[in-house]
Length: 73
Image (cartoon, rainbow, N blue to C red; front, side, top):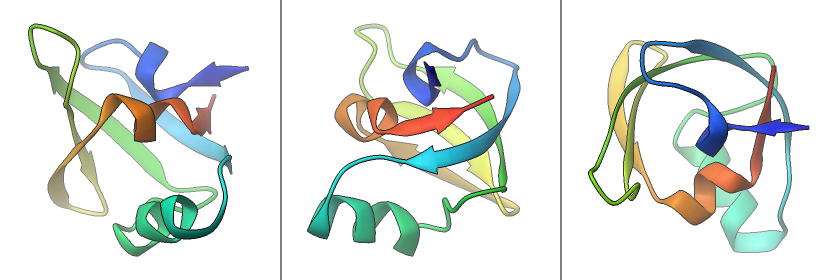
């Protein structure tokens, strides 16, 4: 299982599954990250948090803990 946190800068990954429960999962889905969507990793902050991605045509910063709950391929 590969997570969004493990994806490299410049890579495009497809979301396979969202892990987590309740408010965390709902928040990720509200940001537009759902199963089957492509996510492009733009950059990662020096300490690894947050991760800046492009999803559905807009830029988004997500926390490391949120990125760990997004399974990609």
